[in-house]
Amino acid sequence: MNTRTSVKLRHALIAPDGHVPSSFPGWENATGYVMLSPGMGACLSQILITFEKNGGFCHFDEDEHEHAIYLESGSCTIHRPNEPDVELGPTGFAFIPAETDLRITGTTETRITLFRKIFEPRHDLEFPPAVFGHASEVADEPFMGNERARLQALLPIDPRYDLAINIFTYQPGATLPFVETHIMEHGMLMLDGQGIYRLGDDYYPVEAGDAIWMAPYCPQWFAAIGDEPASYLYYKDIHRLP
Image (tube, rainbow, N blue to C red; front, side):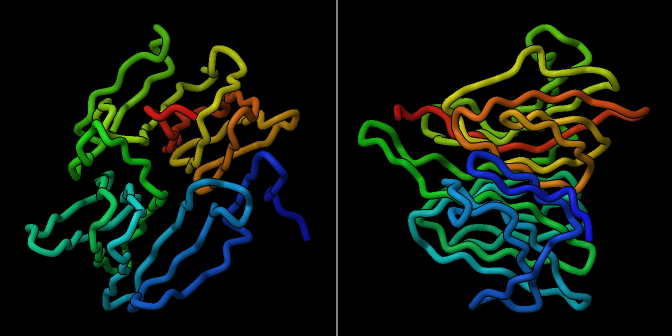
């Protein structure tokens, strides 16, 4: 049997053909597929969440973990104690700060990518507030002046936040301008199209549905190929000294 999945010391590509479901206490009619986790050496978890036909919910306890949510398809409702419920549709996103009891309900069409990490507080900064929106309403900007490679920042660029969630869209043939090597860790989901990703010294064909992990200092580069634009959702840690 063949698969494009590859898990190495400093990076990983998780293709959909190898997804294995998990069930968790406190979840009802909801399934988690853990794409990335500390078990592979990452400092974050990236989880694909789906729901059964008649709907269900997933629950995350009030603890030190913060959560960022992106709705790939369908709709969902975000519930927090003593706060109004928030409804999200396709391309909806949310940031839920640590120390929040969080429940997400969805239906059979609902497909969510969730990033989960331990919040790094600073004594001189307030907790970051929750954020809700839809990527379809977020303006994109040329990346380093390249009109064919455009970036959408879904969360505020604010030092209270210790993570960023962005969408990067490339026209066919567009590339990252150089091989990046940096302290920031990435968790990623290919949303549309296809391309070639360099991770370390390896080159991988990637397509919609693939999850990717890049450890700090893993050399990385991307080129969009094919006839359609390629886009990916990605997490990175920011605003904290190592």
